[in-house]
Length: 170
Image (cartoon, rainbow, N blue to C red; front, side, top):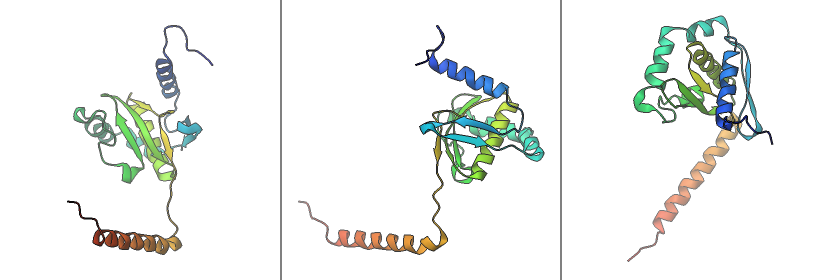
């Protein structure tokens, strides 16, 4: 087992490695991270239009006033955007956030790549590490939709029967 240097805790050496990685990041390049459960995620390279977008004043205002709003520190997905963008950020302080969860989907990875690029550009810190969970995308095929609806109907019928045959308690 490798031990951290004397006077350096494992978490602070991990934080230092995040700082080093972010300093060595070239705006918009593809980047890979080790995440929870021995998995890795690769954020795709960004095009010029995407890089320009994250460098805009509107983007930093969103980061300051939505993600890092002082009233929402510590609350996962304070912006309520998970269903639209496919990842959950948790603001830790005024300029640091952690990615808690990312859906393994090309559009979610692209959105996270833009977010990571913005954090680097604006001098913020974004933790994507072994505490980040990669979630598989489980979408039913169109042919399987009727099977899912059939199961839903059967569950509803059982609930009605259970309600009618309930037990009275004195």
